[in-house]
Length: 580
Image (cartoon, rainbow, N blue to C red; front, side, top):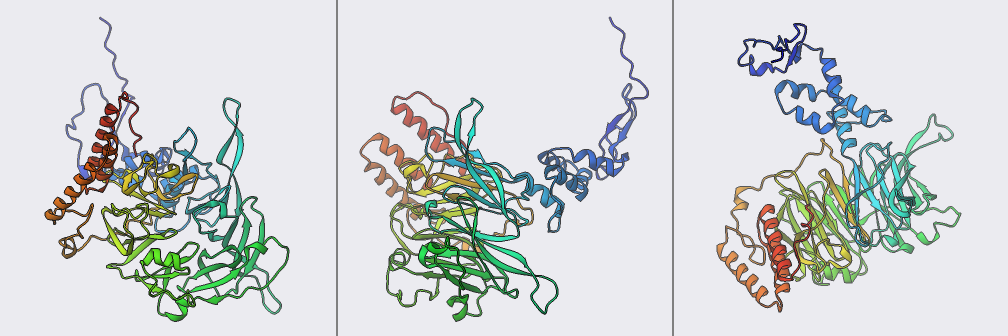
């Protein structure tokens, strides 16, 4: 037998001890282990320096082990070092209660992901990440490229380009090159139509220093709107406003030859001006008139906080959660409200108030339908439902906001030409993408025939996804986590929870057993009317999406139906469905 190794007396065992936990149980020194040393004996600066080399995910996990490490891992010194490591070129830490922690997490979680609808490869890809970007705040895909705005006001121009693959092949790659388009940007917009082929110009709301005029000293910061060609990034037009006017949002509405720019001030007032896009490329200067919009002129007490627009309508959300509408064409008005009774073609800017049960937080506006999310996380849909894009389980138009009962507390909502998307989060903080409406062209991955209710799409969603957008060719998701923007949803009062939901498909709930029974009978009749077994399987998948089940239960039924469908079709067990 070999000799037993004897530990050196100079070796010491480092022990993590937490003052709130008291002395270490079994504190008597064991033979051959040396004297334990508490990690608290190390200088705090040394511990912070060591922890700052850990990945962000591990720093967060270590901070959840005990009270001591929670305080150390939450120190601004640790996050300052992490932020400098993640973004060496970041000069300032930004704003907020915890500026360095906020900046570090913004830069750790930033990312733009996309999934093309066509081609053989239908997987999620990530765009190039600009090193200078301080988090991602907004993005907008145009005809050829993608534009991203960060939290310091820098607008990045992500280009599509031909690149060489690892095998030496030349291929067209999306968002693989980037340049800085401009700095000092507040907001930006382009043609509001869903088809990016119309987005020829990019309108940027920015702040610029103007040289001093005669009789004054020093320069002044003035807001301006700069117009860029989306294809090359060349600036073709600029309009500057008086220094007393400060804006925070810009949206577009109308046709190219009568493009209206709506500008929202910090005080909640809306101004508008009209430009002719067809003449922007001509080298000349002219004066445009800035006028107060009718919604701010007729209702001066309203303080608008957010705007949304499409080609022929505009939606305003006030600080009190009210919603006002402008509709400029009779066809869209009929689709949204089901009638032309109150439409006045001679006064298209007259705001119409929507009747809603609670304060609205954010919205999504499609061509002829819209979605609203209130302070309790409830989703309301309204408008044309020809393709089932309202997610109500049928294809009946809705002339007033109608609640989608089986969806709550979404992270983001998007409405397109004839389909809708919802980004939601599960109890385990995993995210999934739900969609409804027309599935043609692959716009609802996994559901080529579309669906009249929100169903889980076959898309792998990033953990920190916060917004989304869909074009004819591609689905985009922006990843960014801002610790200053915590969930703002409130719990629904008990008096409203007890209320019986409106009877209908998918609206059955435990509070209404009769309504649930009628809904199940309707489901069976729909399945019975399907001519083939495969059609019945597809219909059953849709019905599972309509029913008020938990996400895990829906996944189980969908996977089981896929297995039965493959077995009935004589197809062997293939790869499992992509997880969301």
